[in-house]
Length: 266
Image (cartoon, rainbow, N blue to C red; front, side, top):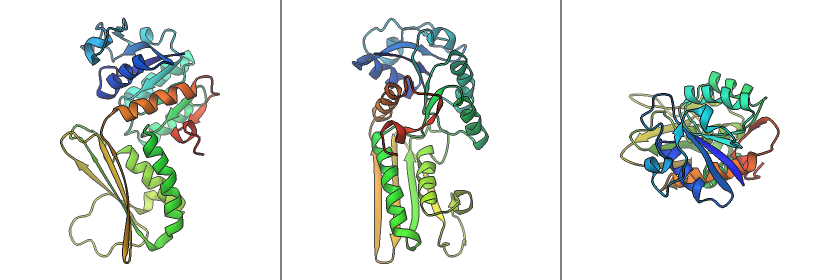
């Protein structure tokens, strides 16, 4: 049995992680926290997220982290880095699903991983992480003879674009083909742009309605097209993956891990 504290507990992901934690046979929800001044502070977690009363009040991080074995974080980039200072000072392992971190912010996160174990992944879904493994093999087999496009779709409230998952897919494919994504990534096309270059990797974004998350990778060749798609119909798939990572990371040595490590895909 491990004790888990959830950051951003009143957010869409925080709520589902907390609820599923209370239902998990090997996990106890020991804390839930929000930023200072948030309207939900002082409320029972269940009054915010639904479900049976937990006795866990949404509080600030210092209160919520008392006795926690692992912290789970799906918030914003700045908040995540600030919370990591607390996790590191308390030696609490962290599972980080926050997206939209800049390159310098990721480097800062890596510094914290020298002190505590961190699972950092743009997508905690088991299916997506299996797909990342498949994409590596597909890309290396097809080589440079196939054009590569990635289309991702999310709900209208998502703040970062492209999604962290789409970027990760592009990175995996680029590395498999010995390309530098910074040089070959194409994120928008408009006007008279000329012929498509042979090595570019297109990454296109859709924002509409309440789409939970959809990613399609297209390998277009002459005479055939291969499309690989993952569709998430519920945030619970990400929440369950985060809880799986929390169970895995307890007692691991300090270091930076991802869901490929958690799932034994490396």
